[in-house]
Image (cartoon, rainbow, N blue to C red; front, side):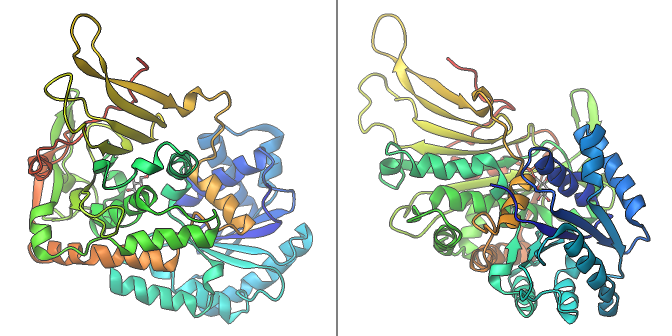
Length: 494
Ligand code: BG6
């Protein structure tokens, strides 16, 4: 299905996200025919650019990131416009009114407007208010939707305050909180795997599952984002949003139908069931780490404290591992081990469902574990591990794997996360956007971790290029388990 005709207004148009992700996503949607000719993009920022200079910047970005060229590139760029606005001054937003009207007339976009806040978070409360001051939020003539980038707040209190601020001018059905993990094909595939097969769901509970591992590992460090990252850390940057959303997809109940409300009802429900963490839980079940300088493949890699923009005495965590539980009928007593970190050995995001072993190992002393590995990225796919007979005499079993890779599909043509989510927002489908109650539930769960860290959380060192501090191994070893150490690619077929 194509996007509805609309004008996309990007605040923060001179920023990194616009030329690295948003414009390339829109270009690709245009290229594959998912945008009609009736669309325009109005870039807004403080910089004194004009339509031509903005187009030229975006053209260069598309050539660089998408290898774009020829007629398609020129046709796409002709839909781009720019308006300089002092985004902190409500009066200056008046300049947008004639620009947006003119674009609606020219492209016959019936007043439909999608605002994208790709700005520093300090403007998330300001922009809706300034738009409203000029009547740019009302839906009398066409729909008005607003996309909010993460972070939705800095902690429980600020998230709540931000929500109130935005809700003063936009109703919940107009607000699209983007978490790009929900736009990833394999995160959505978790739902299809679970709810379109009779095979897995009967086993998907405390009776058959021993524990669940969720890993969001990155091999890169904080690069040139030290200034931002230091105020955020792994907990706010990855855990509070992306990984808790993945956890919700693994753990939620089947929605009656797939639509924005019933899906998001189930997501919120399961997030509300996360077992609240006490100080004692955190003492035993949380490990924080920070990478230090090391040699990787003969090259010296800087430690976090040497990164640009990071204070030399920073205590910010670049790694975290947590054991948590979900207090509901399906999951009571099943540990979820979640970890994320920068400068780990590989970039990999995966979920591992560890099934219980057979009650009595008939064929060998230790029966092979049954695991389902859901690889979110890279090398997206699913791998099932189980025991088979070792060839030869006797009845010994060994672990083998059955693998499915997206790359093996005849025409995988996956939309990237931003392509998918922008398209959904332009179609008015909020299924894959975070709803206010889910965001609130995530912050409610995370707040005690933030408090604990601020008061007494120790941050352990780990060498860049390793799997985090040894304390994290001890955390999982308490139950006689070890973290899976995934490689960059899924195992080859057997
Ligand atoms: C972003 C974080 O939201 O997600 C980054 O701010 C992180 O620090 C990124 O690197 C990870 O996204 P992906 O899609 O590369 O896994």
